[in-house]
Length: 447
Image (cartoon, rainbow, N blue to C red):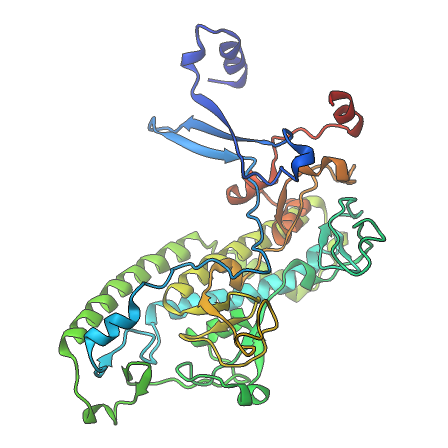
């Protein structure tokens, strides 16, 4: 059924049941469009559409999805996997700890199935860092001089969201300046571990180098870099509680054979999952994109001399590489644990967090500056810096009175989309592409 036939069917009440979709509208009470009691009743509607697939099953597509609210600074981040209650009583019933075997990679060995994925993520990370400055030659990026907000477009927006120094004097207006590549794609730093099973203490902090956390994850997963040496074990280690026991010392302790069989079953199941994940990642990657990226970077082409079709092709390659990197990192985090502080953005790549006392967040005096480690998510390791989406580059001014009608997207996605790349389905709901932005005088006339 073409578009004209759908409109004719919609105009007829008798044939409404013949439409291939049904639209249900819901009011979202927790929508980010509610900015306070003074704007009560101005919330946007969250629309859920059910389109029929080719096989007849409905496909739910969420529209106008709001961004998750940032956690308050006076509270700890919510647990991804909350601790089980009664842990101390279980330890008492279990008795003294026995020598136990560990699953890979907690036993010091590498996961063979994840080594090519680590190399692929490492190359994708380098390509994104080198392609973003190329796109910034075509699409300008602005950053505030007083806060960390970024805007992708020739003119900065007028939305009053500045929280920097003297923001009250400027009525929370931004003072825009020229942006840098780090304002679009930022990476967190982490300590480099020569032995990933060891713990870093506070007195050792100055002698340990720091590098991007994503690179450290790839090194621990199998990437070799001469400037960052790492210990590669050839035989697995065992543990007594949290104490690591090498194979030469394992014969001095009693071994729990029942626990060994359980660990072996878990390892075999995880290897099957890793094999499926690897096939999924390699099939999603476009084979010709690494060669195209290499040709673009080696030629050192000025992007301003290219036509719009060529710029859009480079933007699409950048966006696909960024999505491949995120997908590979998510696979690596399943087996290689990543820890994040529940109070500050500090991340650590390893089974347990370090002991460096440099946390200055909420109630750090009660913890003597130590971090409150918990399991990290993909957004903790690769923070998506959300910016306002500009639909029309010819009229890029975003008004403060109309901010509830504007959508948002990660800065990398917005930069690639403005350069001509296709919008990913994952970020379409939060960009609010179907919302018609009214004029400012129309709002006051409606009120």
